[in-house]
Amino acid sequence: MNSTQDYLDRHYLDQTQFAEHCGLCLQDIEELVAGELIPAPSYLVIDAQRCKSVVFGELLDPDSTVELRVGTYFHPAASAWTKHAFDTLQVHGANEAKAILREQFAEEFAQALAIENGNTFRLRDCFDETGKAIAAGIDQRVNSNWQHFLNGVFSLCVAKPDSITNIVHKEILQEKLSAISDNGKRIDYLGEDLAALKKLIDEYADNAMPFSPLEYPKSSPKRLVEDLQKTLSAIDRRH
Image (cartoon, rainbow, N blue to C red; front, side, top):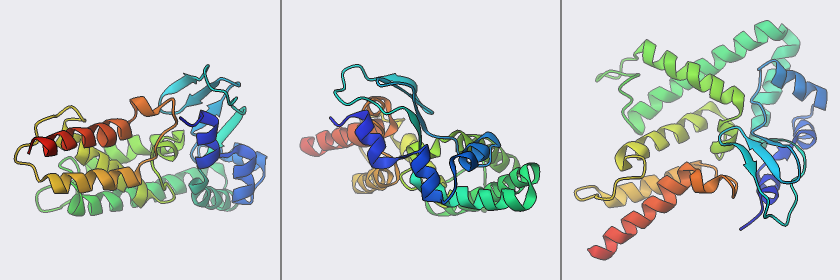
């Protein structure tokens, strides 16, 4: 098993690296995070054996032979939003910039939901049978996911969080797969189109982050990819 630090080095940038990647300085990144204009770091390494994940909280890695490197870690794909947020801040100031970015997020998220409702999975809370938007349902999703976005959740669980479209696609794939599989607990798939289900699993796996070694046993890829593939393989062997 690779170490947690190996995982961070492979998939993330520390704050200094991230600032350079964005063409900004450390103070710029700190100001943007503090103003809730960009996603917060997804990981905070506290000391050589402890780190904090925005999804799973504090994680202890006492057995690793590779010490963790203290710092905060950002997904490099967050750079596009970060540079846009910085430019918006320079032009409009903190309060107006936050409102502008929040509105942009809401518009793009709603548009992506409509696409997913038509192409991926029926979102009954957001659209009626004719595809007409249900404002209250969309607003609820936008509000909760804006906070997840700012907390750095999507930078931890989405493989390519460089657009709202990619984020929503991964989330709806997970929602669909969770519904079909009873969140990975279902074992009887008689009557299901197993080929289509396997394709859905593969697509979800391509769009989800693999998670660090400490998080993986509790993660959705473990539950909805590895474990579910084992279940389907057992069904194939019986037939």
